Picture 1: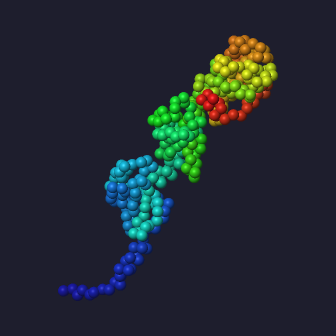
Picture 2: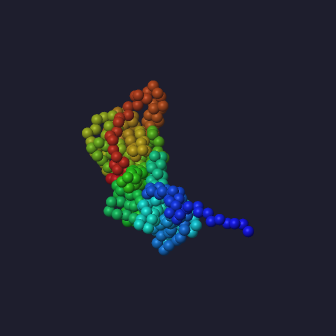
Length: 321
């Protein structure tokens, strides 16, 4: 019979607890960790992230979108990333979030889309006194009323999908501002060319020029581009709703600006004031000459284009008038 001796290894419960503490992971708010769904509860879920106590994620932190039950997002034994939202409570339990990760990645995505000057599409889910509300990558975005280009009442836009351009992306201030108008202007402008003659309608007369509707967007015919003759005011040449032929002399899609000219279409200086019909009759011929001159480097400096006044996209769009 083998003689068994009792061996004292000198390892107490306190030593074991200290050893666990030594190898325990330390978690801090703001960390992103992997976790496995341990248990689904009516208003939350318990998550195993390797801490002494299972962490907890409340239902309101499970998604960037509104959900009614945890199983819409999580499944038992599923492993995924979680954001540590708060430090341990009195029971040693951490609070987690998926929503915070989705917000961080959504802001990163919209910043990228803004940098690419992308056009996005989103359905209006609500309107208010100032404009309309949409969701972009799960984030709430705002379209100011001045940047909604439609004749519909705002309340009738709910459910309608709109093309949009980014005006402001500011995560710190939680501001995501978009423009329906800029998206429409860009789309229209992509179909236009510098040197092209188009037919338009006078929709607005200002001291510095006339706003001409050309297929749903408005271009500026600056007073200096109406005629080679001096003109005191555009009202002396045009009336509201006049139909006119104009030539496009500049397109600036980034700022939503379309610059127009009738001066470059005059067969003789002053024809736009004395005999506009002859200007319209020979418009295509004069535009062809203008384009030829633009193609000749030696004459490019003599093209004689006047600088147009600076104006915002709100003024160049027909819907703004």
